[in-house]
Length: 184
Length: 218
Image 1 (cartoon, chains in turn purple, orange):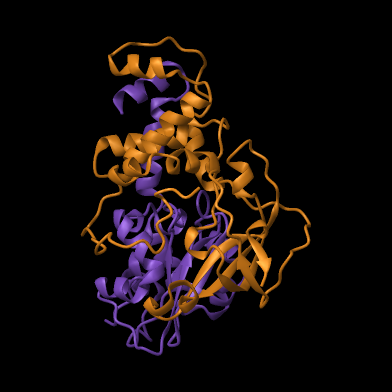
Image 2: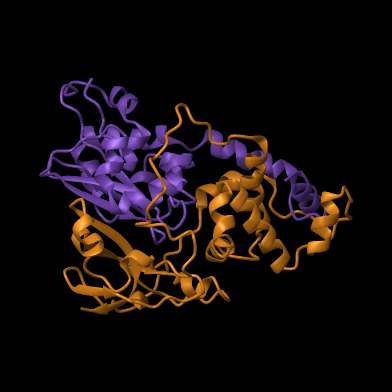
């Protein structure tokens, strides 16, 4: 890696300071805390939720400050008592960077990419997620440039919570759809 | 292409292993592989070309290498194919040879945040009539090109229903090989789990984003 970096920087193709800035941006500016804010806002603001679930999800997400590379064309999927959505990229590692950050290793790995589409309930079980038999599991394979964010169900017992409190309990995996948000 | 990357429905990979408090990068070299990949292109290749560079690896190599090892592999291929460096220069760099500049970097650190926030949508703002509409039954093509495609093997020849029309996008199959955008509609197509996996299905459905050229009326 050092040789490759030296070669590209010495020839003038790459500025080493740019590499540092790229790492810093992806460590600090993006991550699942962003998505959690989007989810918490949708839980507390019905108008915002309707916008988020419309075909203007990218604009709704940008309105709270999150946009850009690998989140240009967003689709938000709502989990309900009847439907549980989960997201995978069987062909590579497509993932909504602005709202979730860079994907965890398991999301990019063979076990998840191979099995999420064919045995989603077994995979969910490995995340400790057991769904009732009458819940329809929908798996979304990100084969194109649409990027999917799951809107998990708001847990019971949080009716009087503020948006900030709610954002604290929204996990990355609940927005991929491999977990549900646990009741407090 | 029917590469090792096309994993949907494959058996034998074992359980999904999670890591607690996982960092974005597990080593410094992973940070550099990530950043070099984002910084080096300068318009010489596109996202579909870089995906093809990785998935076109020998299957045994693809499966044996880690994620950022595959990114490095793809990047080396792209910088050689695009004429930025030669294989000999890459070898010489590994032996410690130094190189004179051939240009000045154009992507400075001040451009990182604006570029990342701007992104680069593959959506194309043009009026093209969709070939299909929501609710229509379609079959995915059985075509198995040796070149780049985003039609995964596990849906080929299978019948599904158009869930929604996402609009007009760049077509990766042509974009990865020569850069032609061939704009066309992309649809979320719903395939019942029973249609894909038969008796082994666990219920529900799989939604796959597919382009006009991958589909025919069923």
